[in-house]
Image 1 (cartoon, rainbow, N blue to C red):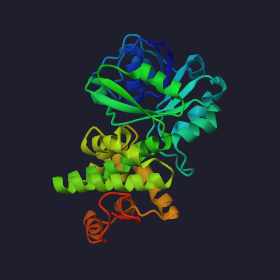
Image 2 (tube, rainbow, N blue to C red; image 1 turned 90 degrees about the vertical axis):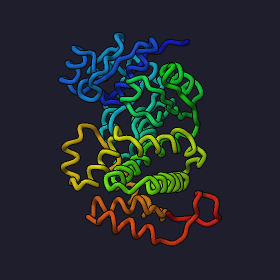
Image 3 (tube, rainbow, N blue to C red; image 1 turned 135 degrees about the vertical axis):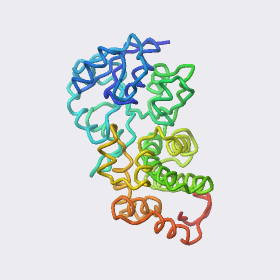
Image 4 (tube, rainbow, N blue to C red; image 1 turned 45 degrees about the horizontal axis):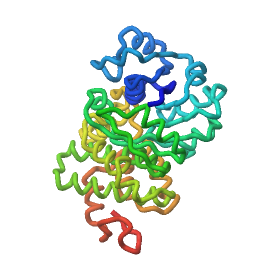
Length: 342
């Protein structure tokens, strides 16, 4: 198996997981962190005590705050930066990029204002052509505990897909391939919205029938939106679509699920953001997708309902009643000749 020099940018939970997997497979791996205090702590404890306490990291994993040096030395670079800081980090790293490097986003979000996906920002800011996206049902704590999991690497570059497989695959972590970069990336970003809804439903104890309906209508709605923007509908039958949706909407480990649950219990958004240590991309994504779907004329009742509850103060009961009494629609998206609604 080929050995690579691997850089992972971002010391959050998933960036740490990716770096640990690569180091565990014997690759020369460095995790870049911008917080000096976190860097010192991880060097001293060999543990991410902030986001993944209790898990000892691979002995060979290195840590650095020198962005240019870390990027310049790498063959394969994973970018695990929250969407709000994603572009700025790439701009700072740009002088160190080399044309042959492979650049992969693991961030499940959409940039505010521009509605740019992370793969688009990778191309714009790096100047590189070897671009990929990693997404799937990947709850960080479960992977660190070596529970079985799978992910999807999406890229038009076959060598890149093979390289990511070599870097990350293990007996407990399987890497699948796809060429639908846009679909895989949109699946990862959009499911955050529905994880918020699922958390709210759990807080209100709406029941298993309601949860099943929510999950299937979420899949219909997110695939409808993504296909309108150019994604392949079949992508949403895979790990990056329904797989990620089920995991994120069913687990209290999901930050977006936690946000929805807290809203369902009556907490304000300001209180939730203060309490939650890591970024929950779903709240920003709700706003952006609501405005984009209105602009494009795509019917997305779940997104609109969440927007009304979170930003306009409508009650969950009002929104649910309006949806339940709406006009008849197709059960399975793309089956009927006319566009359905939820």
